Length: 107
View 1 (cartoon, one colour):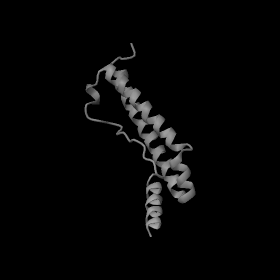
View 2: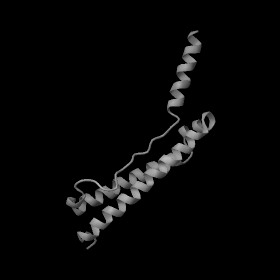
View 3: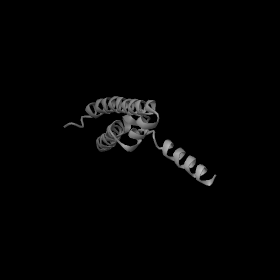
View 4: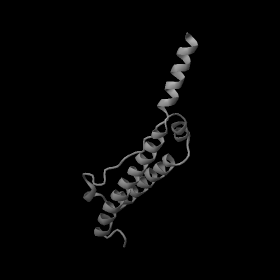
């Protein structure tokens, strides 16, 4: 009986790691207009990190392989979640780039 419970707990733990979650950003945030050029550039670096995380979650990784093996819709969900995160990053980057340009940070 203990072996069955242990196996069930192990399977539940493994299944719980089968989904990934990519960091989501809000395209427009309070205080964006007040950011300095240096703060804007720092935010661009952070957005690149989120974009890389999303790329990793779309590719072949342990969670996606487990999702395909045990419950293939989870793999599709992982991909769509990462894709949505990338779309939000693109929108935020465009918003911040407009502020960056308006402040004359390019000069």
